[in-house]
Length: 266
Image (cartoon, rainbow, N blue to C red; front, side, top):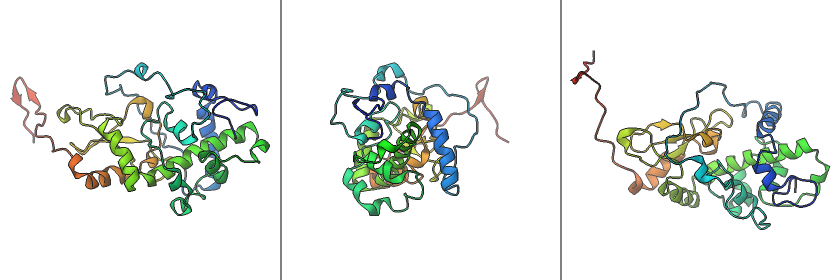
């Protein structure tokens, strides 16, 4: 289809080429942003340009420990697009959405107006071959791929609010896949992904600590993920559903001191 992930004919880039940076993702996303501005400016806009200095990674693990962008063999022809996408480096926050959920039109209500090349993007996600893909230019193929990522994210934010979706995210939470709270007195509490807005392309994903109930920036490799792909509701509904996983609030609080004396607060 549009670009063969497993390598093969049609002149498309192989998966390894894509993973090694052959495709300029920034250029693709910029082009998609322009397309979105023309198609639906009221619902989609580029990320806010508030500059933020790069923060050091909170966790002690180095990126080199996760050197493989995709788990498994690059030549596995049976790998679905969904599995391939979720195993890309930096996409650890995503869970795999059931294809049955995606194939139910009711679950996708309202998304066709938000995503350009919607039908082609949906076909790509579901690994459906399209006879029209050969008519696309290289740039259009790249836009379809970027649109598929956006569409999957918008489906994902709905799926993780379902019973199956929360179950999938539970395993990631228990494995600390979303990172740990950087606050000292939270003692490495596992966090959950959260968006500051439900509007696509308005802000990046943050991590929410259920102990101190505050948000932080995730590790650097996750800081370009759209926060709308997780939404403002997920962590709070998750902790209401799985009350046994909600930790006790921290009992310790940092006390400022000068020469050993507590600082007086006016």
